[in-house]
Structure formats: C-alpha cells, structure tokens
Length: 210
Image 1 (cartoon, rainbow, N blue to C red):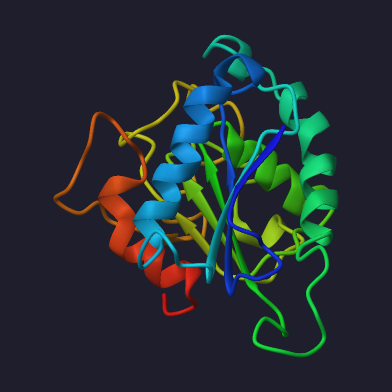
Image 2 (image 1 turned 90 degrees about the vertical axis):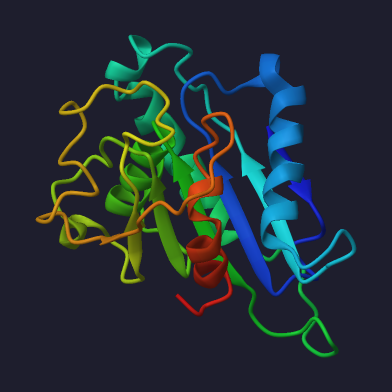
C-alpha cells in the first residue's frame, strides 16, 4: 500500500515515510490522516505542490512489539522499498517548471528504520537523505556498512518509538559510534507523535538545508 499527498512528479521535495509496528491495510484511515498531517507540517500551505509526502507500506509490517523482534518482516520489505525508490520520480518532464531532479528524503519510523537500513545495506538506497526516526536499530552497527553515501540522521527511540525492543537489530542509530547526525527534540509535542518535536530540523533536511 502506497499513499501520496500531491504528485511526486511535480514536487521539488519528496518525503517517503516508512512506518513500523502496527501499520497495514487495517489502519488505512489512520495512515491517510498521518500522510496529510506530515504534508501540513512540511508544506508552506495546503496548495503547496512543491512538496509531496508518500507513506510507503508495501510490506507486511509486524503488528506488535513481540513480532517486531523478528527481522524477517524487514528483510522482505527492504528489497521492495529499494525498488520503489528507484522509480521516483515516476515521469518527471525533461523541461518546464517541474523539470530536474526532486530531492527525496526517506523518514523511517521505529521498525521502519530496520526496513530502510536493510534496504540500504543489501540493495542500496536511492535517496538524498535518510532519517531514522525513533528507530532502535537499522540492521547495522555503523553508517559505513550501508550502501548509501548520503547523510543519515537519527532521533532517540525514547521519543515516539513504536515499541520495537532495543538491542535486537544492530546498534542504536542515535549512539555516538553509529555515525548518524542526531537530531534533538524541540519543545513541541503532540500525543506521542514522533515527527512534531523535530519538524524544524526535518523541514531543513527535506529542502536540502540541513
């Protein structure tokens, strides 16, 4: 399942959100709301077509923290994510106001960080920036193990995590030895939403200013 707010072919900044535990068809309405919420956080206004937000859930996600101990869900999803990113943008014109390359930022939440990490490690990740949002592990112990040369950012799994246990899927992405740029939470929060505390920094990342 892939949900999109705005056409990625016309956008200058494309955000690909990879959810973790509990995501899937049964929660489609919630995912649609989250997609719209992300767009409103990053766009300049409701009619801003320079930003596109895609929620990518084209894998069978674990439905509980207990299931999240199993990396098999992420292994299966990693290839699909890597293949999907290669297709972006789908049909950008060669000339005109929407020509040229869009900046693609992958934001992987919780267990989704393992999916994105394994995609980068095993298949390569075609993106301009990778954010491991409240992820306890990306399947590697350091950024150098990824087949990906772009910047990697991470936030603490203690803020807005999805229940995936620590210590099972590689080193914590926010640990000093991992090699990611650690984002610090701001003063804003909303009902455990993992994105809101980092909106200013995430906005700079997706526009290439971070």
